[in-house]
Image 1 (spheres, rainbow, N blue to C red):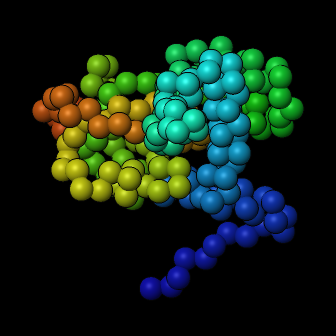
Image 2: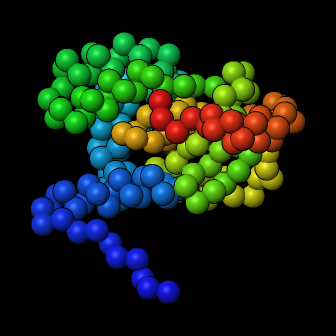
Length: 206
């Protein structure tokens, strides 16, 4: 079988964007270029959120006179949760920060976030299939750096996570922070996935 040729453009920037788009659409996680772009925007946004809301004081403990963050991942997840409870911070951040038009467009799109509990029913080459426990909508979701399959390795399907879904250009990703909701029932998730697959109603963009 002949090896599939990789499309090339004379413009290196255009070629890099084409390769990133191919990775987004056909892979289970973002390209290095896209994941870097995400974190270059999202990490300062979390710092801005914490400065405005002082979230970290809830995860800091005083040990021998020193202020220590007890769990760094938990701290970031706590800040992220507060951000989505206060989406007006997205506008405040855009007003007070020098950003490119591409960054502003991504921040604007994040106002369409979907937060909740989702049953993970499939890990596939082009992303993981998540079913919203409350709305019963079915989503195809990509990882940012690692695939969701790698992040959630060891959990039998289906099982339920708690996270925030975000649009990223022409695909859906999580905010990067995922909790496991053991108490939730995912019994109906497989049926909902099969229905969405047959009806062509799996949501791939927000």
